[in-house]
Image (cartoon, rainbow, N blue to C red; front, side, top):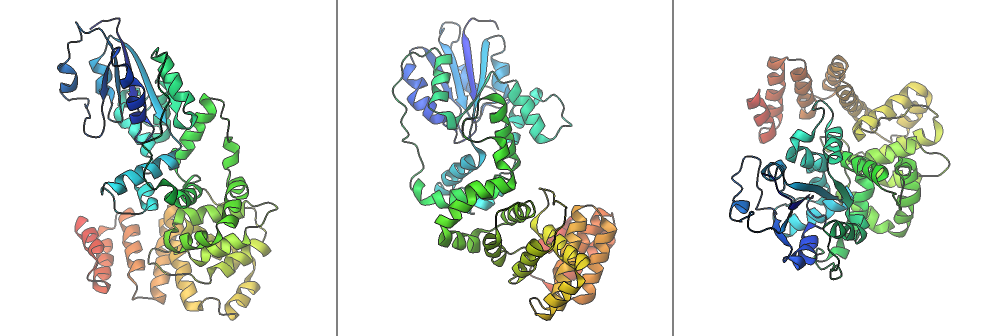
Length: 442
């Protein structure tokens, strides 16, 4: 199929302005374009029958074609093979896009969790979105998901960014050779948007350092255009907290504390601790005190009310030259802190114990559990098994040690022992469905 007709295919993420572009721009010029908006209920699919297109007589109707939506995929490209195709996309700062998407699905009843659980569930959404829709664009399937996504986006004719609107939209209109268009109206914004601004800002701070899609976005912005607002260097942990978080916390202290109580997650605590370890001349003491005081860092939901004293001591008194990797969850870092305090200043540890900041037996149990998590994360399975056996010598009535031991046994292909551990979990907590499902899956 060969034609001089131009086909503009805009495959965009949800909540990046695609509907605004259709409603206020392209559909104003339907005398020139056949417009197909492939939204949530209109995905064509690589192996579908293209009923949306079959009903149009493309031979007699010589209008240019615009196909836009977040359900546009490789099948659309194949259908129009032979035409003059321009493949475009629109990106948006990932956390803001997640936030807007969350408000939409929350409002229509499709999601019942909070913003943090939504973002965790949608982690790597941007990368997976493009890789799943355009698999043949991937140069090396063995690359990680982010590199595969960059392969895909490099094959797009143009990549635009919602943060650059209206300039970015005007560029798209210019590409479509549209000379005049009514002013863009921002009338599709989520209702009560301002009520969520505090939560959005806190979520931005929490996830911009730990969400892989954020890294992809900033890399693309830095590489593709003159990024006018922030450079990638501004997103190192200590600069991020110094320049953006601390002023916000000082202005919204009470709201922040309430947020810490209700919404704190491991990723946020991790970022705080990493920032502390990398700190230079500025002080985060109050911030870490607040964060760790309200943090629930262990899987069995133990509330470490006095852990801030140990961490505060470490940060202010002990000088070490290690850096915790960015992808290490917070409980592993807690184990590191305990280990360093124990190994580098035994006399101080005895002083801390004598002050009864933590009950010694309970502290040792939590240390072994946290150490086991650390070893599992580092794939040191023998060390993890030993730490869990030590924990079980201290407490036999808490199922978390048995559950973690079952995980280690599965990783070591000891299925029989793993089932025995899960049987013990079910004995201690007979109403826990997760233990039973895990047991039945082995």
